[in-house]
Image: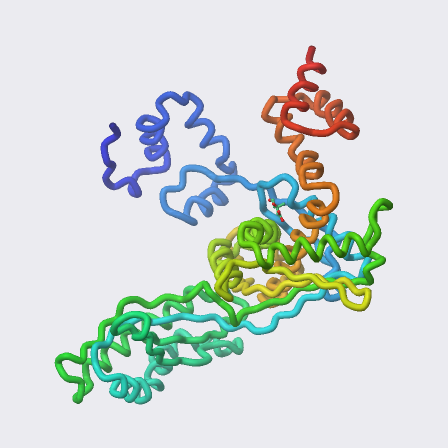
Amino acid sequence: MTKPVNGFSKFSKSEKIAWLAENYLAENKKAVSTLQQYWNDDEKLQKLHDEFIENTVSNFYLPLGLAPNFLINGKHHVLPMAIEESSVVAAASKAAKFWSERGGFKATVINQKKIGQVHFLYTGDFSKLEKLFKNIEPKFRESVKSITRNMEKRGGGILEIDLIDKTQDLKNYYQLFVKFDTRDSMGANFINSCLEKFAEVLQEEASKVQDFTKEENLQIIMSILSNYVPECIVRAEVSCPVNELSEDKNMSGEQFAEKFVQAVKIAEIEPYRAVTHNKGIMNGIDAVVLATGNDFRAVEAGIHAYASRNGSYSSLTHASVENGIFKFWMEIPLALGTVGGLTSLHPLVKLALDILQKPSASELMEITAVAGLAQNFAALRSLTTTGIQQGHMKMHLMNILNQNEATENEKEKMVEYFTHHTITHSSVIDQLEKIRS
Ligand code: MEV
């Protein structure tokens, strides 16, 4: 049994690795060199990465791929995507090319408000709390002047502060419900700093109120932004005449559209399917969110909550055919930033934003939503026509070959062979063995 370790964060990097190797990886003779293999030779760059988090022992690589030919609101983009799943970038590129020949994607930011809450308990009369709130509202704003000054210069700041009575749902529970405009920053630190100040003001002012009796007690529970942002919505869409949809001689545009719309309808009413359907959308969204240094956990949590806003988990995308026109669209909440956080710190994040021509937060919302819509289009197109495995296994072939340490020459032969044969794990292994013997 390994003993608990004290003061681990104070160990040097080598000490941490030595401790790990001794206590958990004694059997693995390559453990230390595997970790070291991923260190960057550039010491300054490595130090930067070491300091992103606590107890860094190595770097964890993800491929950064490019999906070209995205025509969005009339402008061409190449999308940087950080993702490990083999078929995602290929699918995005294919969908982008397809729609670039049919007018491209349209995307619009509908609104861009972020939300934060101070959660507190109050045991007294609501009218007294309301009176207190009205009296001290200017004090809330006053208390954060030094924090909001720069944000206000950029046109953002605090939009609304409301007092919400939640006692129907939980005894004595109230909130300060605050809306923010954080411009091009994701705004988590800004929002949380403001909320913590509001909580201080509320607690302090409550303690001064003369007509609060002893029983009328106010207790702050916590102050934090919400990653649910249903007022930070972006819409992405594509449309074209139905007869321009098919690229397959065996299926007309009408037949394709009918099947496609049906597949979306299934995801609208069937949660088991909706989860996988939306997972495909997140393949595109997360990859851009990660590459641009944004918080994919926040984005995921917010989007999935939005997908269940009507009481049942449902598809994020929708499709229709009306008067011979196919339409495919999605509205999702996306709180993203292009300044602050990792954006100017991580060299590859900076580069990803340069690749996207230094977008504003709202432009990045549009691009990211389009990546999700494109991914869903590509997935549904495969699912309703050839099936997903054909494309998926084609991309996965290289993973199987690498797992089996195929040489470049073997890879070439295998790729050629599987241009005309069905790829499964066992067929690849069999063929590799044949080549090798
Ligand atoms: C795989 O990563 C994503 C899909 O399963 C999405 C879908 O089923 O729509 C192909």
